[in-house]
Image (cartoon, rainbow over all chains, first blue to last red; front, side):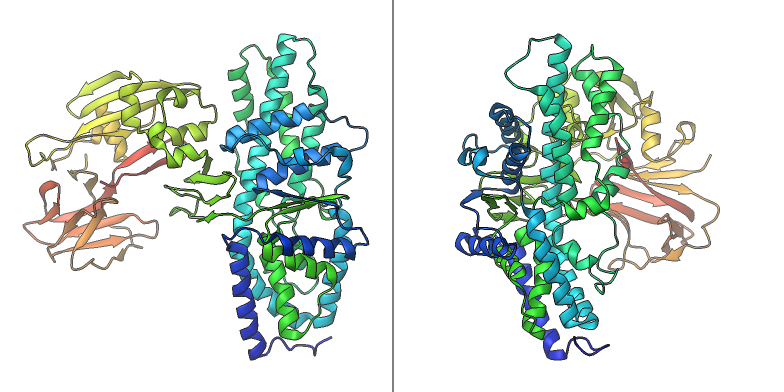
Amino acid sequence: MADGGVGLTAEQRALARVVCQQWVGHGLTLQPADRTTAEAGVRLVYRAAGLPPPQRVVWAGSPLAGAVAALALTAGSEPGLRVAPEVWEQIWVRLAAEAGMPAGDPVWAHLAYDQVGAPVWSRLRDPVWDAWWAAWAQVGEPVWEEAAAHAAAVDARVGAVGEVIWQQVSGQLAEAGVGLRVQEAVRRHVGEPDQAWDWEWLSEIWPGLLAKVARRAWLPPWELVVAAPGAGSDVWDGSYPWEAELEDDTDNDALPRQLAEELPDLNEEDAWDLDEAYWDSVQRGPFEEEVRSGWYTRGQHDAGALALIEVLDRAVGLRPGQPLAGQVLIGRSAGWWWPFEQAVILTERPCALDPARDEQGRLHHPTGPLVAYRDGWGVWAWHGVRVPRQLIERPDTITVEQIRATRNLEVRRVLLERYGPDRYLRDADATLAHVDEYGKLWRCDLPAEEPLTMVEVVNATPEPDGTHATYLLRVPPGVRTAKEAVAWTFDMATDDYHPAAQT
Amino acid sequence: MQLHYRQGDVLLVAVSAIPKDARLLPRDQGRIVLALGEATGHAHAIADPRAVLLETELQQRFLQVLAEGGVLLRHEEHHPLLLPHGTYEVRRQREYAPGAAWRMVAD
């Protein structure tokens, strides 16, 4: 144990900076995975846990592809559950369509369920835990704290990318689950005879699987760093990003409303049952359970934790145990990975990365993906709303019918914005609700939402050619007259609005 | 009713006083810029030195016109607007956005 109260020397600190810089590079690289190195790392981690190395190694093109395959295989390993491959095929097709992924060649097709075995991360992590504790004990608190502070800066950059990816993966899985539940409700509702697919079974298993995913979501080895004594509370504030997300989401009626729209005859009780099941499926479990139950690890996106190990190794001569060394190898060379008894799923690294944000700090990239993988999967966002690729990269292909048919209100708002509200008014046969000297008030119904209401105003100053330019501004749907609309845009009472001069 | 003047997406509403916490804002290259177009870089601006712009902690903006004969507010796409001597609250035009309540217009 190092001397009490002494942190890194100036020389060690300089080395820590170099190592952390390299880990930012590993975390954000756009190079294809180094498969040989990653697979060697996997064997090390297995060996440290006293397990034979996995006989089968399957590479997924993206975290979503890996997550779907891992879900299928996890379900397949649950004792007493009959897995209908067609069900998973159905989920895959839906996800693939949703994500614009090339059809065919699902990852799990390479793995028969009986050749995979149970997920083993919960077994692999015990030696990992032990190695972390040993490392802490060996280097002492001051050194650990200082090295952890360096590593936290790596996590702030790389872990954030992992978060963005996770939100997209979990969001798509949840949406697919909701979609399947809706299908099940439809089937029950119309009293179709039983199909080959065991929908009841799926309804049972899906929430549990999603919960399993959610629990693992924010607990990569990084939480071991922060859970270890001496890591300091400044590294992690104890909150979980998805908690804030759930609390922020005040639109609790969205799903019942969506269901009601889709199934006009569905009674309210059924709709709420489905909603409840959905929310159950995305809530996290008790903390202890989260820590103990493992599901996936993030490879390169664990760069923060792995940088800490390497700083301790190279700067102060800690010799990391095999499980940590194995993780370091994987983190340097691959993305997310899911270990099973007889197989491991590893994922490729992204080919594009630009997690841009708007002025309000929301994820926003107006022209391309935030993250993209070579299999076509990626994350696109418009002012904080996750959207399909088309909305960002091919807004010219958006149609009035598509806007009307889109059920997700947030996505529909983005569609409308990208299409152009003024153009939509024209193309969707808006009605002229009011005209006065201040302008024209247009109104157009949107399905299941407040009507689109816009005021068309004329610039007071003529253009060089003598004409007056017009423009449209969206106003609240309750507005009745053009004057009221213009007054609203300046936060004025209607009766008070009367400019002494305007140009 | 308060007197008010409009140039495009900017409205100046005459007020009797400026909140105490308002602080003087520095000029931008010698001009007071009331609003800047996002895409065009066009500005609603006052070059006359006899005016000052202040901002409160809540980012409310106030314009004080000191010149007896008023000052001119100019913009690349609008006729100049003569603002008489006095104190004004500067309002930007806003647009309704479902979910976000509203957002600013920038022409």
